Length: 464
Length: 97
Image (cartoon, each protein chain N blue to C red):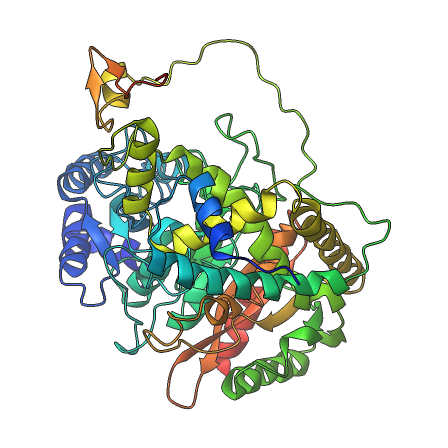
């Protein structure tokens, strides 16, 4: 379902009915994409918007359109659990800026979606509430960490959902479920009211069924926010249809890349070339080290961000003989295995004696990765790669092997470390019918290029 | 290559304010060892003369006027999620023994 389709239905039957229908779909969701439905507030807002529309008032660009938000984004009249035991009963006293901005345009947040606890994971299997299933196959993962948002959109529960992306958490599940997932430029979208994971790469973005819908949502949620001092402005998201110079990242092919993913990507390359775009190979030698950088930098940042969960101010509290034991008991019960693993890694690489060898070294290699992107963008408008090395894997396939799980992020992590804009768009299927996406990457603040390239691709793919 | 002992894992857990049992410690020892082995590939990357990047936007100190902004949040609303309160304050166990 596109946003335009939802708006057409609103004209026909009114906001109330469209919201009731979306809520009904969310309630029978067999994929476990939705954690909680926000019913009374949604219906009250629907009635209010219906009344305003009847009076001929201008309500906004998303008047009455229902959506879902990943459950690490603070919303009123619901819990915000981050899919964790720690925040199982947390009720936010304020809403995230992104929610406020969407509501100001008339959109209605009808509920919250599943994720890996605290967004740590690439399959949504680390959720305290159990995994979300892939939209095409109940035996396979949704991807993650925004798995619930991707499946909810792919299953047609809502026309769009919000996710967050730290190293691929919007793009990889979008690829696994055949929808569009946009990771905007780092800093372009406010994170006020979003549960922090890794502060130097976390960004909020939309999951939609079309590129045009992703453009609209980013246009609404972007912008400098006085409540988030890390926000920056990006260029206007103007539409332009022109021939582009596309660089294909060589490091994203070969060993470890599924044959169907390889063939879908090469078909896309041929289609783009036939349409008159220049397509050349581009070499980013340090790209292959990005995952190693990521698994130092991100644990270091998240261990600091998760230090706030001490069982005292909010979240789970377990009793102990003294204050230290209260901290330890609360954190041990509230965090999942993957959370603990990453906390320990983070504290290890930050500890005295190891800081230079791991953390500083990783941030230095990060500079090389950024430099290589900058060089590539001198010759190419946009870069192309698969989104993920494989289609959706089986539930449980990688849960005993954290490193294998991390490899799913090998192509999405480098743009995250560089802060550039990136999108995953559907490009085909595996032989067995699983969705496969490709990724386009453009420089920081040039989300317009990423969107225009993806939209051009979307049109070519529809015609093919 | 760096090796991690069981004692290292226990010390790390303690520094992280996490309690782990012997089984968890043994499992984490293997997992952390594997992850560290994986990331040590970075030692092979020549970074001579390269500066680290800690944040990518280049923003420096972002200032605002020193004025109180009313976010419309009451003390009661902010303490709603606090497990243990008394008289509008957060209650903790004795800090100094």
